[in-house]
Image (cartoon, rainbow, N blue to C red; front, side, top):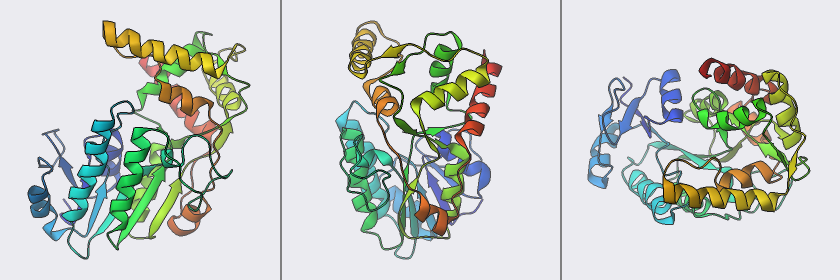
Length: 300
């Protein structure tokens, strides 16, 4: 294993995808079966020992809890503070942030690295605070990543299942643009950022209208296009009722309010900086959706 490149959050889906491509040491909280992994409690003292010879730390670990502010702050802000504090002076850090820092209503369309940020959830605020900590280290790259899809991201199966069964509804008029990015394209950007670039980069794939996304998915599935429409406000009510239902009865909600926000907001991004400096070249969304549909069909 390459003892000079470390990956936190290595047992997660993105982390495992990075390790499939790169020669690096996995840094995990508990044993996960990854070859050569290093187990830590993520205390500052432990991280300093692990990173003492680090050339690059790819920091992917964090909380994706959109509902619990305390978990977001601990998992994204405090953990990042300990990681950055543990870096040797000359080490490089590549940090996975999120386009959520811009909020759901973009100040500019298309948005880029210079667009004013406006976090509108505890998760987004925690990512922005983590970015500020990373920026205190001189040798850094911050990747503001869109909603990731691709092999292993089975949460998208619930949408494909609804389309397949003719039960999916368009939210609003369906003309809002949705910014997805394929996991392999994210890994490409991370791998490039180990050696190239400095500062902040937007990492988002092709931003297509909601209706076009569903059209592609329905054609790949061999299903009918969703003709029904649901007002966004009603979809939000449904998502909140799902949270209430699962809090009382257990299980996982079909959709949470953040899902509705992602699917119904109009967000377009300009990734020209990442294309120029990192060689970022995301695949067409139609190709990526086809891959997801193929995986879905194998699973049913």
